[in-house]
Amino acid sequence: MSGKSHKKFEEIVKRFVELKDTSELMIDLAYSALLLNSRELAEEVQKLEEYVDKLHTEFELQVLTSGFKREEAKGFLGLIRLGVVTEKIADAAAQIAEVVLRGVEPHPVLKLAIEEAEETITYVQVTEKSPLANKTLKEVKIPEETGMWILAIKRGDKCIRPKPDTRIHVDDVLIASGYAEGVEDLKRLAAP
Image (tube, rainbow, N blue to C red; front, side, top):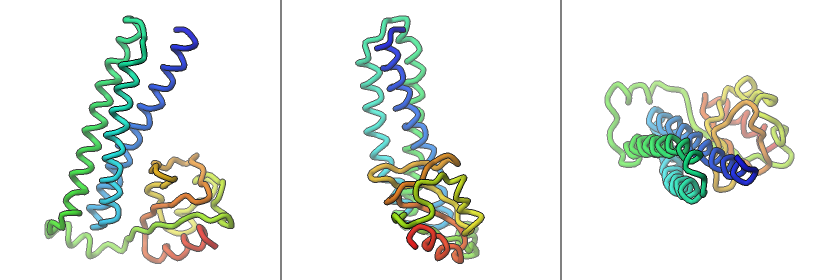
């Protein structure tokens, strides 16, 4: 594979990974929206579904217009098929979120679980003075400090599925879930 082909290949893989990570994030957020009966999270899932549709189209176009030789292109057929699957996962997440957005009365068992849960969802924006800024999630130990788990990080138009090595930037919006008592602790960390 030539240097030019290798660069195209890396771009295609990078876009596929973003597609996969976003669809996985959507499933996490959709189930959280359902379990916590959160319209905010459900709306976030809907926005992400539109983003995944666009990302998937761009991904397929990039593969189809890459100009690889026939023997190189065979390997991409599997990637295209995986792209279709990730888009179906995103659609399924959007359907889960739709239940919350339509205001469908939850099943009595789920309703009881929602009422009994002491969990909540919060959104906090990281300021310049925050001790979280420019540190990784692993370094800041948010769950240990606040009892809140970071479900997602909104960075501009993007929603990121957090990993331990994900670095928190100033102006990131942290979407967190946890016990209500931890909300104020997280707000103090993000915006002192």
